[in-house]
Length: 423
Image (cartoon, rainbow, N blue to C red; front, side, top):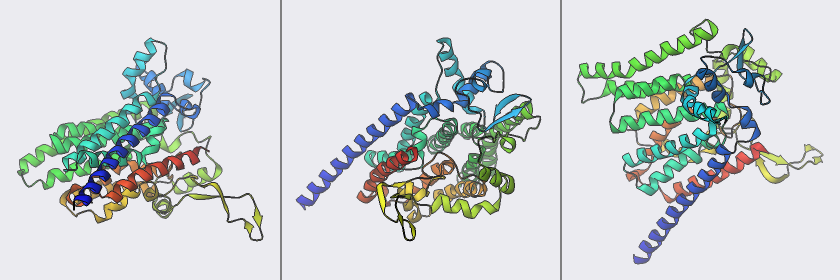
């Protein structure tokens, strides 16, 4: 018995040291990549450029971006000789004060400078939410690490292009809303947060269903209080809809037009143009393809450049595996989330599955599975709700040794796959 306890204590110490060491390592990698952005990342700082335009009272990209040395107009929308951004405006608004301060010193504010802080905050909030569910500090740290570095978020932590920056902002907002719900439950604040989500990534906005249903099924509230909670929750979102509509109308003369329908496609391949033209942005015909890439696709082998009698050889060469467009299965990148299938069917789990299911259906119908990714990063829109389900998958709020090892190993494997993506 004494030896068993001694071995258990030693193992706990090893895992404590492991999560501290791995967290420091991955945050160091994130810091370096965020503060020393690569050339591709430097080309895709659209939100910082747009923030500069907002400060000048304009809604289109400044001339020094359109005509500058780092010009890259992919996904921009050209109207009347002006170039606009097809994504929501909030990330640019968030950056505006920092862009202004750097402008005073004739410096450019790269999105990664803030993105590093966003990742720290996401990690901290996931840790605190796990603690709310009675996990120990060590286990909560493992779960927060799993969310940030042993999942599809890892690439978003490292790469600071505009597309991934907006997703980092979205994830932080949704996690922040969940944290608010589990602490003070101020529905007016949650409504404001989801108004900002709407003005960042529309596809993540159905996450508000979690809070709408939670308010409706609250057994401790009378009907009047439920209605009051819904008004507090939805009023800021309605205001965000009006602001976003006015923003779209000022740019395109249509409050419902975000620019996605006619974004600049000079950089698309003929195949990509065919998919967009024939399948549209949302279509049920996209579901089988996206199901495969989201949940089934595995890494591709790296074969020897040697022909055999049957064509190319089956023999592998170092480093043996790689990621090709459009990435690989969510469960290959985040295997710890296999545990969600054994989660207890609590009311909270059922609540989390509602927005997760709606968001997943929307994403599965989208014509484009994503670009510059290891796993399907669009699923970040629902990852906070999957995280809630994961918290209910471990009896007595205690991670198993196998789960901890899986989190550490998958984070390293993901880093290896990310390196193959850049090779």
